[in-house]
Length: 414
Image (cartoon, rainbow, N blue to C red; front, side, top):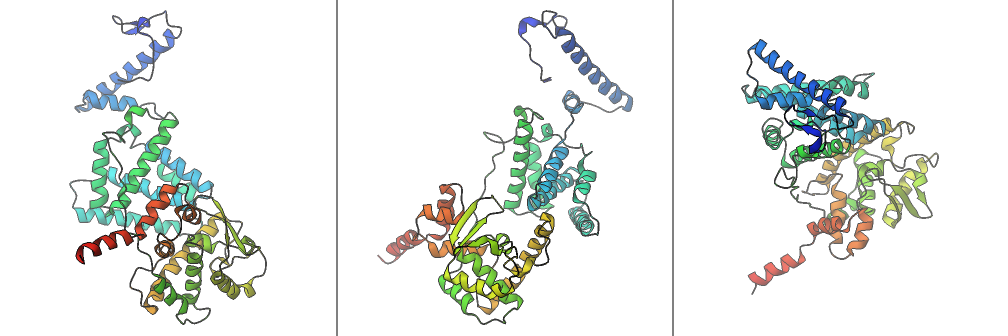
């Protein structure tokens, strides 16, 4: 059994199984070994008393966990709490959901009917959502109550077999799609790397990479609108100040700036506009950017300018009632605003006779689709705010089809 202690071979007495006095810390190390042997005796005596069979492997597992101060759940919960305190509400909410999913897996009764298991999971999820919407709900206190004393899983328990069973559970009982399952595996890997760095778990227990679990992110089909479809959105007649009208303005504003995230658009203030340029920092990666305000975007701004009371006002109306000093309140109202926008984007698509899934994120795909290979990758990298040029090239490849189309035509029309 691995103890985490190291000595030279000359300092070890093989016959007595103890550290020789030649080692400066022999007394302390021998006491440590006696303590571990006593723990083994306690476990075997308890097993004899209860008449339970305990294998040597199970004894090793119990000894490893005995005295450990941090479980997988406790470590993950601390990360969730730190992200919440840093104002990264979207991230911490997603990670908390993953912790609940892992716990559901551990409590999964394999002999229970599938429908009953799923119903129980959904009921517990609804209860958590309902609790979070109650007046006086304290997110940090909720995380503390749920996971601060949860020791049902340690990092050493997360093996390849564990991960394979977890993937089956996610697909069969949580009804997750492949990408969602992959996100969970990435979360496991992220926590494992952080735990290794902090000395909570030994690197030898790492279940990823090499011949072990390999995470493969499958590419997804990215479809953007055409220039003609964008023009339909621009020209369709809508009732001024109506919800669909505001939705169109926000979506087009995002598109005109190379597909800025909708949440960033909603949080933009008049103070972000100076000297005919937009200066803003992405919430996702905190990257600053400065772009010239296109004429099309200026027309949209002109609609809202008469409503401006100060430079600190939000440009668009969705956060007008938000408390700008509360990051949590801004996040909640931004999230609610994106839900409303997605709802009315469906109506906008119907009015414009667009059959593609018109969503908040498709603004960026549409810009990429129209840009094609007409703009250099380096410039697109800046517009997309990508850290790596390779990311830009891979993203843009979704929208460049000319060579493949020409090759197909050459064969069929030869």
